[in-house]
Image 1: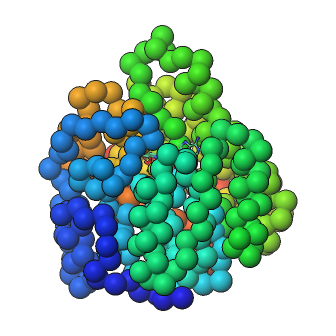
Image 2: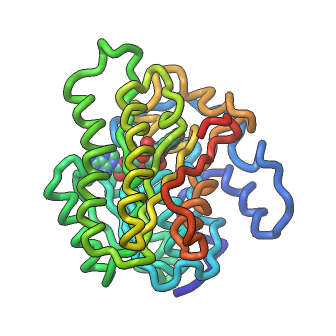
Amino acid sequence: MPDTMTDDAPLTTSKDQSRAVDEATDALIDPQNKYHSEGFAEQKQEWPGLQRDMEPVPDCGERTYRGTGRLKGRHALVTGGDSGIGRAAAIAFAREGAKVAINYHPKEQPDAEDLKAVLAEDGTDLVLLPGDLTDEQFCLSLVDDAREQLGGLDLLVINAGYQQARKSIAEITHEQFDRTMKTNIYAMFWMSKRAAEFMPPGSAIINTASVNSFNPVEDLLDYATTKGAIEIFTKGLAKQLAAKGIRVNAVAPGPVWTPLQISGGQLEGKIEKFGQDTPLGRAGQPVELAGLYVTLAEQTNSFTTGSVFGANGGTGVS
Ligand code: NAD
Ligand code: MG
């Protein structure tokens, strides 16, 4: 398993990625303009959106993340691993030496195949397990399939999420509310329950919460409700699974440039200034969260469980 990546990794060709490549030289880089900081062109895609069609293409660390073997011998399943934050975690895990499987919605096959090609350049075989997480039976078989195909499962990143912005509760349909709950809460419950049956001591579950877990954005009522639930579920499950030697933590991102935002996650007109109100003055890029997932996954941090870690550009939330 290689612990480095090539400088000429293909795909995801955003011009903004070039700035971060300097990281490899160990030069200090001002976080205010380390990544895209100019504001975004207004853009909209049908749900779930493909990151390969975004402008700029989100930076998930394809060209920059370098591993040092921190997850050697581990077996990881990452939901929502085709794009955005999950993709950044999947790249980092693979380059840290873990065997990795990703789940994604079947409509996202192109992003998933792009990622498989990126990791194949490293000599890594990414396992693709597409399917709809709103289905209980699928969630259960996903965990089983990942275990079987990876030869074990000791790292579960529950990261998939559904977010559709609505100005008012009056505009949230029963169907939207139900789907948001199923994707963000029920799937987490189904998968955690199954995985806890067999994950060995030393394993880790990492959920993706949000700044909305602590302070809801007003036009994300249903979504923010699920993110509050994820924060509490993480802390509660950590107490239960401590006795099995399984740690449970969460990452709580602020505004990050991903397909979720341009496929209904923001009200019309809000993309241009997306993330610019953070103290760092810009949205985050997925790669900037990858290290947190690795940190929560690795055994070095064996006393850390039941905690939520923010990555939000300094908003002070979480
Ligand atoms: P993303 O669009 O790249 O990832 C979301 C993923 O969820 C999709 O790629 C898709 O694979 C998956 N998904 C949704 N519904 C599904 C279903 N029914 N079946 C299978 N897969 C499904 O966007 P992202 O921003 O990287 O989102 C990842 C996580 O980060 C989410 O939980 C999101 O709530 C959270 N988050 C994002 C931000 C942000 O600003 N981008 C902020 C806070 C939290
Ligand atoms: Mg996606």
